[in-house]
Image: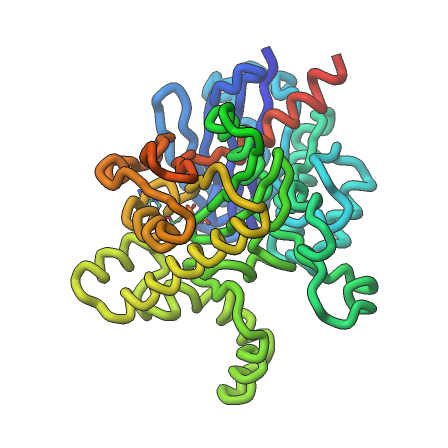
Length: 400
Ligand code: ADP
């Protein structure tokens, strides 16, 4: 019996799950929100209870202490020592990390050196790691990187065609994101590939942030996000790939600074920017059904970008055995899945059971028909369990 805590921190939030490993049972989960402002929210779910309180969360150290003390006070654990390991999700691992790493001085300084590539995320992750180190000084911790799974790409897939000295000097390249999710999905998908010689998967993690990854024999071949999560397919508020000159032209015609336009492309574009309505797929698709033209345009672009990437990766992989839909939209939105499969259907011989598809929300299901040349499956993703598995293996099992 070993308990492992996973932590997913942002600049003002901290999501957690406590697992019993190796059984992978979730003992409790929840989050601490609005860290740094006077009106914090602490939500914890355990044993069928959901407790919500409104403590002042001055900083991450206060939040971490409150969380660990709550676990004891609520009788979820008897003492702090019961937590055998902590796994922290880290957004940017740069060129350094091909897999999860034990947290030590070297790991810390590498994550710190990558802050310019993920300013909000990596800085918050480190603050959070240090906060837990203070509360649980003897508990080993690991870092699991969103970028690690994508480190198997070849240079043709990760080098951008800019002057090469910049690539070398500043490590400018495609790092991708959502790697922990794509890896989880490729492992979960193995059961659908027993009858195929090759194992070629196109994994579509489509939520507010969205990325598509080509996976061959368990390894990432190509992924849609780029240097940062701004690249790839269109998203809730991000542009995805565009002609780079749009950036310069928008600066010129609006008089906005590069930073302002960068923020616009990250936070005010995508679904939200085109529809002028919402970044949420539910609002967009409801508006489409009511005849809203800009919502329809936003949705049509969204679907086409996904279909284009699937086509690109079909070629890149030399065919495909399985297409996976996952994350908020991929798991819950049958209309988007149906539109994407319609768009690729003729070229790739993909056919889904539309009636079955319309009933699938947030659960695993094979939705393609027997006639489909590529299997299509919905798989709910679980990044936390991947982090918990690594934390258990590296800190508990291998140290026994
Ligand atoms: P992220 O983790 O990138 O913030 P999510 O994976 O949570 O994003 O996905 C958010 C998107 O998923 C939103 O566009 C939302 O509309 C959609 N979504 C989430 N839940 C549902 C649902 N139950 N039905 C339809 N769409 C959903």
